[in-house]
Each structure stands twice: as C-alpha cells, then as structure tokens.
View 1 (tube, one colour):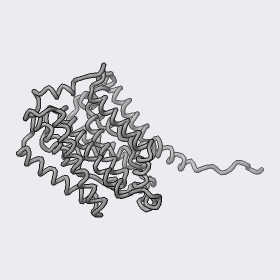
View 2: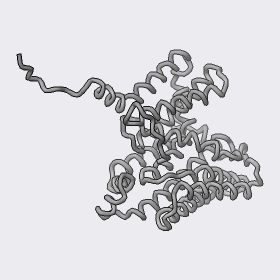
View 3: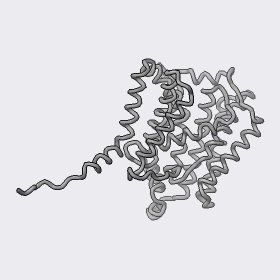
View 4: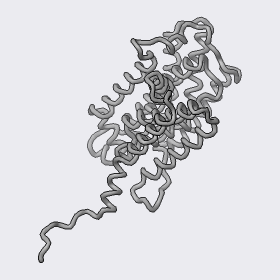
Length: 328
C-alpha cells in the first residue's frame, strides 16, 4: 500500500528548532516560577518594582553595548567610561554644580570617548577589541586622576531623591529606563537607520554594495554607546549614592553577560534589543531571589555562571559542538 504523505522533518531537527526559538524563554520562565514557589516575597509587586529598579542601570549599559554589537563590532571601553562619567557627575554635584550641568558634562565625556573609539575603528581601521580595551584603560586612568583613587559620595544631595521619586507606584528610574528601552527598540527595529545598522553588522560588503555609509554608521554607533555608558553610570551612581571606585570594572562582565543572553531570545543568535530587557531581568532576578532566600553571595555568581553557560549551549546551531563566541 502506497504512503501518500510526504516525509516530514526528522523529529530531532524539529525538537532542535523548537529549543532554538523557545528554549531560553522556557528555561527562564521555569526559573522565575521556581523562585516564586521558594519565596513568597519574590512574587510580590514590590519585589517586581525592586527588580526593575536594580536592573535599570545594567539594561541601559547593555543597550549601549548593543548599539556597537549590532554594527558588527565589539566594545569593552564601557569598563572605564562608566566609572569616569559617574565620577565626573558626582564630583561636579559635590562641588555645587547643578544636576543638569553635571549630566551634560558626564554625557559629553561618554560621547567623546565613544567617538574616539568610533574614529579609530571606523576610519583608522583598528581592531575594535584592542582599541576599546585601550580606551577602557585610558578612561580608568582619567577616573583615578580625577578622584585620586577614591569613591565620591553624594548621599546628602537632593539629586539622590531621583532614586526614590515615583510616578504613581512606579519609580522614576524605572520609567526613565523603560522609556529609553522603547525608544531604542523603535529606532533599531522599526526605522531605516536601525535597518542600516543591522545590515552593517550582518555584512559590511553587502551594506557597501547597497549604498549604506558603513564607516559613518560604525562611528556613530560607538558614539551612542558612549552616551548610554554615561547615562547608565549616572543612574548607577544615584542608586549607590555615589561613584564607587572600580564600578565600571564590576559592571563590565555582568553587562556583557546580558548582551550574550539576549542573543538566545527567540533563536535570533544576533544582538537584539528585546533580549536585553530579558537578560537584565534574568540576572537581577537571580540575585534578588538568592538574597530573599538568605543564601551566601557566591551562590549568586554560581547560578549566573550556569545560566550564561546554558545560554552558550542554546546559542550554537550544532548541539554536539559548543563553539567559542566572540563579543559581538
């Protein structure tokens, strides 16, 4: 008897495709449900607000890295630029400058360092990896020279009230970070400029053939990254009531982890904006849950490492071989 049904896709391939698209979402959802079951305080509305507040600086910094990643380059300068911009902001506030002036100077410094990276990579043809590491050390040196290697506190300044200020039940910091998130999402996924940036990241040669100004896009992507490093540094300083020395270095690896997790969301395997929100919430949720469960801090690092390793497994096309990923 003849079988008229067409041979379907092998079950293993269908299963692999399913986990490509939904594996990370299912895993992270299961993790959140487990935290809710283990801790009644975790599933409260106040804790959700707390997670959003804590993840805000990390998300903004990760958005800055993603600007560069989507243009096909790597950026490690964040580890130095964040600390410098935060120190400039807190230092000017401590000397009596207005928050507006301090913010403009801090954001201007972030933009300047970003454009320096962009010029060296896009126009001088230097490696983005080596260039941004160099700029990271340069910015760290400038930070230590400005602060004499000391943390700078603004505990008694009214500007720190921004952290506790709310719009209804929602903190202003959360509103600002989500507003930035949706603006960046719209620009990068719904506009021609965003399409051009992603085209450059996918193939520079094809982008050039299509008439896209590749060098200009790379240049300004680094510049926008620097602006977001300054914004994230300012918010992190306000949340900590000051600029803590080495703060940029401490944030670098978690932020890179967020950008890596983002590539596993819905099987994109590419830098993308929606995944940044998920990645930031996942890492912050782990830290918050373990704190509520009264576990030692090092268990948080272990759990975050396991999540990142699982993201690495999900990000490869061949499940039998785990390929080494670059930082893009």
